Image (cartoon, rainbow, N blue to C red):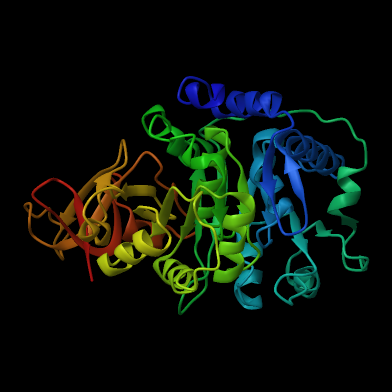
Length: 414
C-alpha cells in the first residue's frame, strides 16, 4: 500500500490525509453494529470535527473519549489530527471518583461518550459529575433515543453539514493524555506529544508490517488502550481492516475468525488460553489465521497449544502505555522464547539496573529501564511521580524485572 511506503517520509498529518484520499470503498472497520469503508469512516470523522468546531472546539482544547470499542471511539482517534485538539482517553471501567479526577485534572471541555457500555449509562455518569467539573462544556452521547443529559448527540453533529477548517498541528504539541485503571489510587494521566505517539510507525517498524497479516485484524482491546491504538493504526498503515469486539468472548471471537476470515488475532495470554480451550471443540474453521499476538509474555505450553489448536504461530509483544512498544518475539522461534520479551523495537534502548538504578552487566537480572522515541512527556500535573519514573536522561523505570540474555534479547522474569 502506498501509505505504508511513505511512513517516515511524510509527517503524520499529511500521511493521514493521504490515507483519507486513498481509502476508497474497501472495508476498514467492522463493529457489532455496523461495517464501514475507509471512505465512510474518514467522512464521518470530518463531519464530527466540523460539528465540534461549531461548538467551539479549537486547537489545544481537550476532547475526552469515554467509550467502549465502537465506531465513535475510532472517530476520536483521528479528531486531533483534523482539529488540533488533544485527546483525553478514559477507561470506561474507571469508578466515578477516578473519572471525576481525570476529567477535572485534564481540564476537559468536551466528552464523547455513550449511554450503553456493558450495562452502564456513561453519559448519565458524567452528567452526575458536572457540578464538580466547571470547565466541562458539552457531553456528546452516542444516540439511544434518550438525550436529556447531553446537549447534542454525536450523530446530530455528524449530520449537521457544517464546513470544516483543518488545523495545522505540530509533532511537538501535546496530543494525548491517557487515564487507565490504577490499582490502589487515582489514575495518572500519561501525556504524549503528537510526534512521540506517532513514532511507532517509523520506517523501520512499518517495513516489518506484512500487509498479508493485517488483511483482517480481530481486536478485542478497547481503543483507549495502547494495544487498541496500535492495532487500528497498524491496520490502516498496512492497508487492512479491523474487527472490533465489545467485550471478549472466546466463542464469539472464533466465530468472527471464521465469518470474517481473520488473519491476525490479538489478546492477552489469558484470552489466548480461552481461545485454545474453545478451539479444542473443533467447531470452527480457523484456516485463515496466520498469527496470534500476545500482549505480554506467553508461557511455552500456551504457545504450543496455540500452534496446535489455532494452527498459527505466536508473537509476544512487550509494551507500556508510557513508552510504547518495547520488544517482540520471533513467531517462528522456539516456544520458550515467547515467554521472554524478545528483540527490541527499532529506536528502543533497554538496560537492566540495580536498586540504585546503576546499570548491571549482561546476564544479571534487575529492573528494566527503557529509553524510547515513543516516550511520554510525563504524568499530567504530577512532577514528583514523573521524576520517580522518568529520569533526566530519558530513561523510564518500568518496575518490571528482567535480564539481557546472550543473544542480546530482553527476557522478562516473574
